[in-house]
Image (cartoon, rainbow, N blue to C red):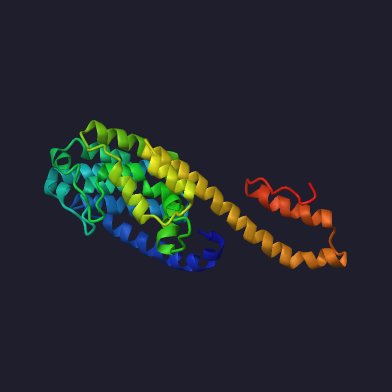
Amino acid sequence: MRIPRLALVTAAIWGITALCAQAKEQTNNQAHPTSAHDVIRHLDRSLYVMAEQTGGSPAQWDMAESDALSAMRHVIRTAPETLTTPDKKGRNPLTRAVTRGYTDLVELLLQQPQAISVINHKGTDGLDAYDHALLAFSMTLVACRPDTENPFTLVPYLVTQPYYADRDPFPKIKALLADAGADTGEDHARQTWLAYCTNEHPQDRQDVRASTDLQATMFAVQARATQRNKRSEIEASVATYREIFEPWVDSGRLSAKQFETDIANLYRDAGLDPPESKDD
């Protein structure tokens, strides 16, 4: 995942997309949702527009979640049959809310008999709600696909990470599902991750295979993969710096000491330890 190379390309694409999303959001605010999926789509869109415009804040997220709860209660009263309707990926609203990490909606849906009746329903990906809670893809994309550069996947993921860091929803969602009677086996989610994810780092894959707490392992792998990506990006920057400024050192325009200090600072500014000097 090399974010700097995407920045200029995605800025134009997603600036336009945010404006379109905002217009759609304003339209949706004028009418009550007609299905549970509508509520989740609207919350998705609201959080994304916030992220693009202001970055979002806990107060804004609280308001969006409160609006979503009110909308879902309206759907439960007026269109309860939509609580079991699958979307185009075969996910019922409960599974979809779990996938997105919407704890309050999950908790509300788990109070509805209709949602409980499909708690173990699998989507077209073969995953049920508990599987999605374990894998927590909304927070662990880098663990699964560390080299992804698809802006339509990467940008929404990146801009909504402050929301997920603040909410940390998946441990609670996992517990809610277990308490509601979900199948709590982990092997299917594990095998799906190993088959689907492109992360080929040997230690990461071994840890997933051996894990007895798959969700915790996902977050550990995410942290390691993120750190590796960060170091890879800095090493690319260092290589560029060396290419440009090593001739300056050779010609005496820049001291070797300052050159090495500048390189070390590139690592430190990214929160990484610089590699040991060759002279150490």
